[in-house]
Every structure is written in C-alpha cells, then in structure tokens.
Image 1 (cartoon, helix red, strand yellow):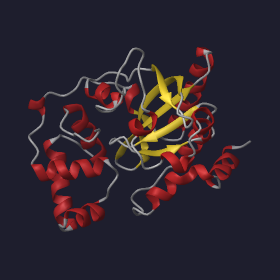
Image 2 (cartoon, one colour):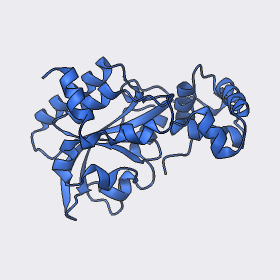
Image 3 (cartoon, one colour):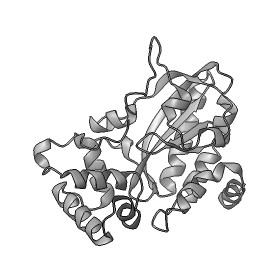
Image 4 (cartoon, helix red, strand yellow):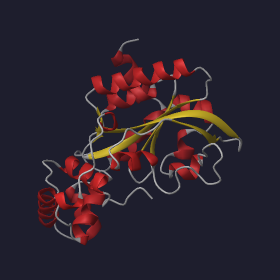
Amino acid sequence: MSQAQTEADWKSSAHNTILDRFSSLGPTHAIAGGLLASLAAASIGAYVVTVDQTIVFWNAAAERILGFVPQEVLGRRCHEVLQGMAPGGLTAHCIEGCPSIRYLRAGLVPAAARLQLLSSSGERKWVSVSPMVVTGILKDAPLLVHLFDDASEAEHFSTAKESVSDALVAGGAEILSHHPADPPSQSEAQSLTRRELEILRLVALGKDAPSIAAKLGISRHTVRNHIRNLRHKLNATTKLDAVVQGIRLGILQIDR
C-alpha cells in the first residue's frame, strides 16, 4: 500500500481525532497528517500527549493492546488513564510529571521502560514503553510520542520503533530526544516575567497569538511583544526554540 493510500485510509478512520481537536485552533496549528498517518499505521501501540500530558492521539494498535477506544482517552491526562506502574512502584510512574520531560531537562535521552499499564478491563498489562520528544507535528509545540508493545520479543519492538522513528524523520519531524544537550545554566538566560512565563506555557501547548490574546484578555500586539521579549531573553531564534529552552531550564512548569 502506498503512503498516499495509507494516509487517505487513516484520515477517514476514527483515529484522526487529533486533526479535529486542533483544526479548530486556526491555520497556524497545522498538523502534519502524514506524520500521524505513520503513527496510525504502526504495528505497535502509539499515543501522543502534549507537554501537559493531555492525550491527543491514540492509534489502532494502542486500542488493540489496552482496549481503550480513542474517544475514551483523548483529552484526558495519560497518567489518569494508564496509571503506569514501574516494577516495585507503589505510585503511578508519571503522576509527578512526564519522565520524558525530566530527561530532556537533564540533557538525557528519555529511557525506555517496562511498565504495567491499566487496560480498559481494569487489569494491568506489562508493556515495553519507549518515549520520544518530537517536534514538527504541531507548530511551535513539542509533543511526547510514546511507543509501546506487549509482545515478549524485544527484537520485534526494537525493529518497529526504528521503523516509526525513520518514518517520522523522513516526514519532516525532528526527534528532539535523540539529540540530547547539556541543560543551559540559569545564568545563560534572563529571568522571564510572570506574564512571559504564562505566554510561553501557552505557546508550548500549541496556542497561537490570537488565541493567547483572547485567553488572557490582551491585544495580539501585546502578545507578540511578549513573545519577542521572551525569545530574546532565552536566546531563542524561534518560538519552538524558546519552548525547548524553557523546558531545559526547568522554568516551564507545564507537565503536571
């Protein structure tokens, strides 16, 4: 089957809900449908969350493995739905913030893990989970892509992960977590004001200037001035760079 056919089939399925969720936010929130089609067609489970841990995509393999249909999970926090438990753990693995974001802050590659995830039946299933921090799907906002599988064959999961990663990169995405960097020191960036931090948080969630202005009750011009100032303070050339810098500095508290 060709890539065009795969994407067409996916767009007509129930798993394209992420497009519906973001299309109402305006043309600047362009979703790379081909990238999500790659995730939709994956043989292993894939779900995507925003940096505040809200699930915005859930593929057919995820439904097969855990039993949840997209409508049951989209718009909810991943730790509330899946309640991932590490071996020997007594609390949900992700409830204190996404581990992928913590690794990114530390300049490390997010670690794969063996977790027990809650299924729709109420039972827990052992799965291998591999997280990635990906840019290029939602404009100006990094997304957290989690690949997982309940199969016992580690080689199969590894091969499937590589296939998905290659497809994302080929489609124009960047897997930020594959290129870790030392976290910048606080002295490398000027302190942001409360308002600048508020706007940076909204940018990280994929909001554009008009929607930020409407939410905060200020003009678009004021929003753009704040964005220009915070980019300067963070030595960032783009809004996405500013978001990544904010995460790595630990000043962007949006994952809880």
